[in-house]
Image (cartoon, rainbow, N blue to C red):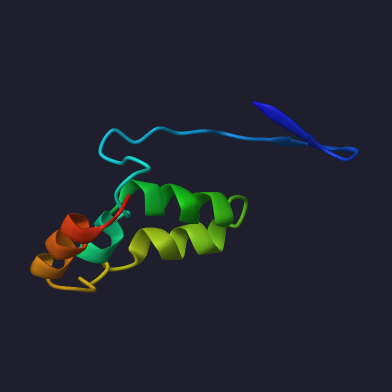
Length: 80
């Protein structure tokens, strides 16, 4: 898909993630480990920067941000 902003054309990609929806808050990044959506975002930001991509590949898995019970509670009370 190509989007025109003023006189500039920008190539866009719209990936779909089977485990994600727009309704509940995204909780996978808070669980730590790996998350495909986060990996794709970082790869897009660092596109063309081989040093940054190499560092990303060597980065340790992210740590859990909150206990699982907090994520389940957030999902239960979320109005979305």
